[in-house]
Image 1 (tube, helix red, strand yellow):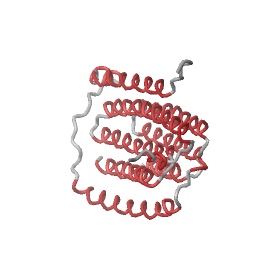
Image 2 (tube, helix red, strand yellow):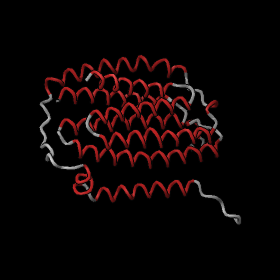
Image 3 (cartoon, one colour):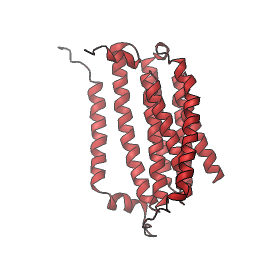
Image 4 (cartoon, one colour):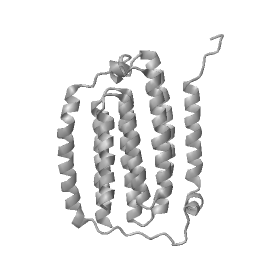
Length: 102
Length: 162
């Protein structure tokens, strides 16, 4: 069982790496948010894989469902903020958000 | 297990496509396909409720929200991602894969089989969700309310006298 757990963890780490690269290298606000979504997929995969390995799949499932609900709230709020930023700056470039920097 | 590995590979591949595609609509659709792969993986891991939530909420609702935002902003052309970021990604990912495989191979012999107390045989999902976890579900309701109020506050219309 622990071999299967390590396999799932390896793929979850891959997703985490892809998401972190996106957060570090991209400039488009929507792309940055897609990076956060990719990271969250890795996290839910790791949660469920750990539940499967410890034979607690029902509890892991309920945790994943909670995580998904929180994720939806996060997405709705963040996308609303992105639309408002676009209305103010007419751009989705994250570098333009630094113009108030002292 | 082979099908599971193919699905996991598809999940990572579609996630990479989602971050590298120039067109934002293609990115959103790739993300939805990645969610679909993850949902099928959940079904095969004997977690049907998580799979249903992943496919209906993440692949459905979140993709719709992304496409709606892309349609509302229409500014994908004004942000040019640097070519270096796209060129460095394959090197970064291959280096990470090598490191990942080495670490996991090293751990394979060292990590003991995960000991856990198995859930009782007759236990149902509803009992675990509503009886084992009670207070954090209240927190979950509050999170949903906070999200609703945040969206309402962000899209508030101005009064006529303002």
